[in-house]
Image 1: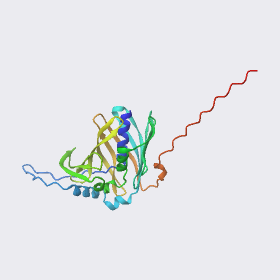
Image 2: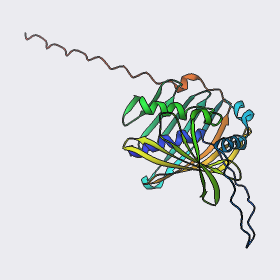
Image 3: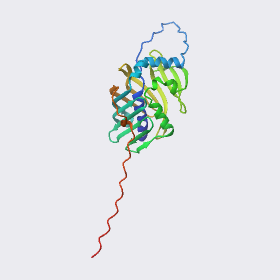
Image 4: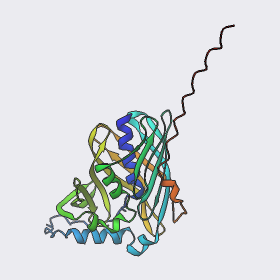
Length: 273
C-alpha cells in the first residue's frame, strides 16, 4: 500500500497539469511507393508547435487557476477512490485523495513549502530533490517555460506510440534526471511522458499516456490518463474540470501540527485517617 500511494500521488499531481493530445489523420503511403526520410525538426520547433497545439500562448495565459475532480482505479491492488486537484498560478497546487479503508491523503506546494499528509506517516515537509521536483511540477505555466525549466533538450528520433508516430525528446531539468517526451508528429501534442520518480521504496520509472482530451476554455485538458510501472497500471478519469475559479491561498498552506496535550499530574492519594 505504501509504494502504491507514493506513485499515485505523483500521477495525480502530474495529471492536473498534464498536456493533451488529439487524434489526427496522416496521409498514407501508396503501395509500391517509397517515402523519403524526412529531416527531424529541432527541439525548439517541436516545443513551439506543442504550445500552439495546446491552444496557443494567449489562451494558456488567460487561465490562472484550475480545479479537477475524478476517480482512480488500480486493479492489481483492488484499490479505487476519488481525488480533487487544485492549482493556482504561478506555482501553488494541492491534491486530495480519498482512499476507502485507508483515509485521506494530501500533497501540496504553496509556492515555497512542499508538504504531504497521510494517515500512515502523518504530516511531513519535503526537502532536497523532492522539494526541487515539487517546484518544477508545480509551475502552473510549465508548458510555456519548457525551454527555461529544461535547459538541456535533445531530439532522439522518431518512435511509435500506439498507432501514432512521435518525435522523441530527452529533456533534462537543472540538477535532476532526464525525462523523455513523445510528441505526435501530426498534431504536435504530447502522447507519452517517461520519468523517474522517488517513492517510498526507491526510484520508480513511470510512463504516462494521455487519452480522451477535452477542450476547456480554449486549451486542451486530458479527461483520462493511464500510468504504467514495471509492476502495475493505474487509470485516472476526470469527471469535472473548471478553470479561473477563485481559490484562497490558504488552501495550499501546510496545516499547523496539533498541539501535544500536556500531561496532567497524577492526583495525590488522600491522607489516611
